[in-house]
Length: 256
Image (tube, rainbow, N blue to C red; front, side, top):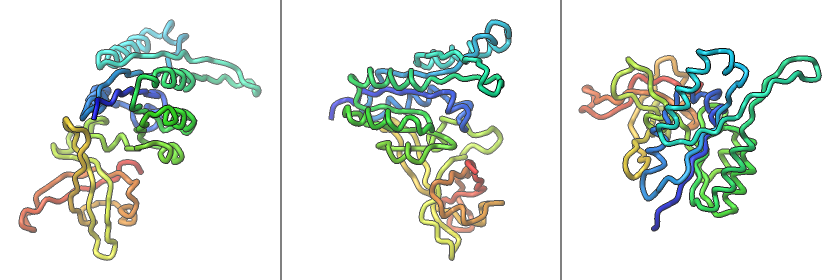
């Protein structure tokens, strides 16, 4: 199989507002370059308040530092300036919509791509996903919270950004071996199931599963384990009372 020519398009405002604040762009680069994939395009679409940039030095410095970090990871930063306008009710509203820029760039650049990784949860992009697929591209969507169900279903693959190791760092002080995963095969009568989680290596994302018992989900209503859309954080521990079998302990709900 030849190399898959890949492009990444990040709807940065949507990701930031919907659970992905602090996302690591370098991990995104790693993900796009695994397996038989070669990264050709990496674009991030950001909003900037031009008036505030002029007047607020701290805002300007912070924003430009953030843009520099993204560029150092190998992304092209495409800025959309926020528009301030007074609506029909006389209320001042702000709007910065980079959807059109992202869609047009992706469509024009897709002629040279085999695979597009789209970071957004916005259902407005369904038309783009279908158009890219009709051009022969494989489209993978990554989102965090409030992801449109129709967008998930339209994608060739949807994966939650929470499940990609390191993409959204796990808070400090929670132990070294913290993972995020989803429950599978939960048997409610017996109170156990498995957590599926991933590691990111040279071949891409590799799934693993680990046994858990509902008693290790402190403050978790066990019906939440029946839904594999729920994402949990947990530690992987060898249980001394059970022949040192590997288990998931200290389970907390992430996306509730």
